[in-house]
Image 1 (tube, rainbow, N blue to C red):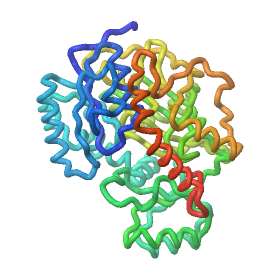
Image 2 (image 1 turned 45 degrees about the vertical axis):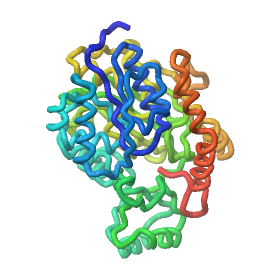
Image 3 (image 1 turned 90 degrees about the horizontal axis):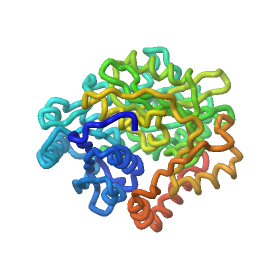
Image 4 (image 1 turned 60 degrees about the horizontal axis):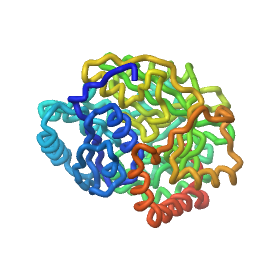
Length: 416
């Protein structure tokens, strides 16, 4: 590698909630661990794939739901900092962790943690579907037309005027802290279907109703980047999503690196306007009807598929984060165009579903220049086998449930 990291500064994977099969956390442990950085992680127990990695110096078993009081979570992080005993770079893998860090910067910094400093409320606003939409409107960034009903009467009014199908999403990212109104992205085919579904949303529906961007006229793109304290990109990557699970509405199962300067410029401009600092994972949909890239989701943290992206100097967003926070230069370089990323345990069912639908991604290269697997690594095989052991029976049942939810009648299907 044409760069040297500070091996005296460990990294800590920070996650809240019960999702032990998280390939992104394993990828971050490997990425920095291979450079000699001591890696630690918060895990559900001692038998998760992350805990099994040869590159993990220590696991902190701590089963959380994401619904705990923030003060309790901060206290737990402070105790972990004392056990590590030296300055440590925080690497959040979910919105709960990213927002908690932003909103409690002083006590975490006093404990010795290193993280990008950002306006306290910004990550929460970016992670919120409503907050993101408002920021897009404010800064002239294309996004799907949206409504934010405050009552059932608002939904009735929307149903009379809207063009169907539409998409319903939970308004806030923190659905684990309450009862989510919808199970992920939900396509609603008719006005009556909306009225029927909305009866279970209570007096104050916590949803966003969004225009449906038909998959036949659209293409899914992703942007991963790291921005420094001046909101300047130190590592910028663009790619196209080939498959996701559940189909067209879930996590990335297969993706390619594809150069897209227009998309990179749009992301850099938006980050500069908002003043964000840190790692980002953006989901956008290119709408062929009007030729615009529309921002769907802003994750103010590392994305699970971040290892798809690496530049010629060997930099990914996690390495850029560690280098910058430890006062070292982040080497520049072109991204490895044509590289492919595959999540082994969900790509096969996704492939079968996409073949049935006939959907293809025009910008996906016909042949990969190389493939990065989410779970398997010859130098670190134990996370793969641990994933299989935890996934085979409950995982197969979960995949089936997701698929059933995604295909069920008028209130489900491919979404934005």
